[in-house]
Length: 275
Image (cartoon, rainbow, N blue to C red; front, side, top):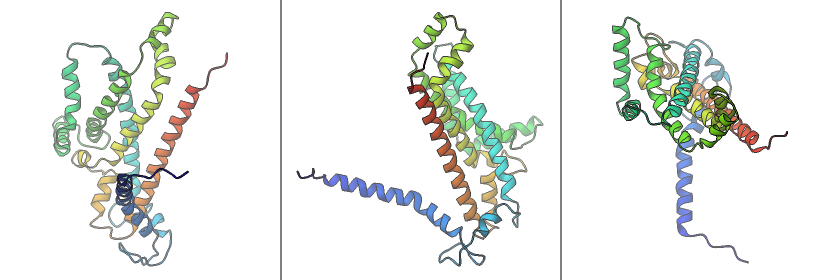
């Protein structure tokens, strides 16, 4: 029996997808290869030798600044943003399940920061913190700038999650005598846990990679994106490529952990509970 002949459009779309993958991962592959050059290596092909010295140099002091301190600042900032974003988005998602006065105004004010240019938000937050005498730092004004970026996205996602949530589960829990706290942690949260993990890692990624909203609000200390940008005119060695390789591995590790956690929770929910 002969196989079904594929239409011409199939080959066209397959070729287009192949070009897209090449465009997406081609530069990443070049960065990875160039980060493995020998001591005499430079920023372009052909490679000169092979070594891991540039990977090690990432953790050492550079000619101007260093990557390690900036990485830890970005990591801690991303974790704080992740926690605050998850808490705020879950609470707001539950609040918007019921109509209340001013809901439309709050909704549009929340997502309006996605429309305003990021550089203006960064400038406005920096000015406000200076006028209030608080100063600018990565853990104050930059934190606020990042939340104006992550909370609207998380808020929209949680609105969609709770929009599909069946309130009958909560009603059954209350009929059995459970209070609101027990109902949330025993009924609601396990059902939305996979979505919460997705929101958490999305908010962390948005914060960890954010440049524009941090540029004017971070004060005297740089996050990792700002440090990389500042070093592009000073660090002219494969150390930049090595940093790109390590941060890419770190990002894929986070994605893998998130997928594992989601799969684990989904598997637990699909198994029937034993009496």
